[in-house]
Amino acid sequence: MTEPKQLAQWWGRGNPVDVEKYEFVKGGAWRFVEHSDHGHHGFSGEFKEIKPTDRVSMTFGWDGMEGHFILQTIDLAATEDGKTKMVCTSVYETAADLDTMVGYGMEKGMAESYDALDRLLATV
Image 1 (cartoon, rainbow, N blue to C red):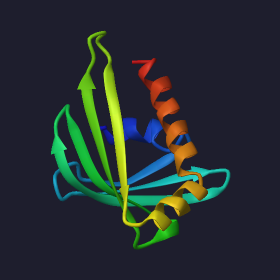
Image 2 (image 1 turned 45 degrees about the vertical axis):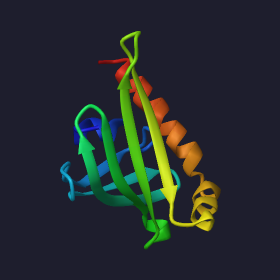
Image 3 (image 1 turned 180 degrees about the vertical axis):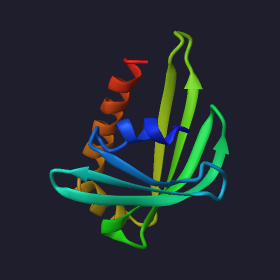
């Protein structure tokens, strides 16, 4: 989650991703562009909280819904079997924003990205 080159390998569901900006500090900005069969999709936001190895909180926006941001928090915790549990919580400004993002396939896209992360982790 801290290395842009590794993020680019899994973040966009395994599709090619350009990391245009990645300032991994509180208040820092980030911007990725995913390239898929369905076109180019830009995503951006700002880091709100960073607790190394424990938590990253950031805003998340999609160019297709400009001006609407999600607050996304990722909590990480070591498990007894030596793995890492990751819990991602997304808070939407409105129920309509949630419905719109789900309608555009965000849930499926996130699942595909985490599958790509699993494949990457299996190689390191």
